[in-house]
Amino acid sequence: MVEAIKTDWRKAQLTERQRALLTFSEKLTATPGEMKEVDVAGLRNHNLTDEQILAVVLVASFFNVATRIADALGVELDPQFTPGTPEHKAFLSHSSQK
Image: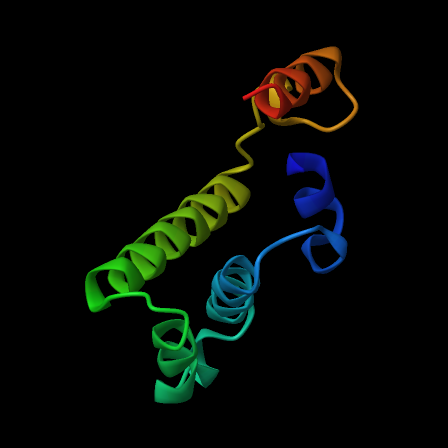
């Protein structure tokens, strides 16, 4: 499932709640200035609490900031996170066994 989500999460077999979380996170990543109360309401419709929504925002935002810093400084990913490397394949294999 990890690879399916990484390749195209829209085609992965996910619950509606998982899809709502990913839709929200993607919008927060791609167009943060366009976030509206309706986006938060969409998560509330899937029974997420305000604390859970805050956690989603914090995690997505952290990864967005970390990625931008790494990109700006030319930081290379560890081999386990670089697609096509043996380390990456092993990492995915290990992740899918959980």
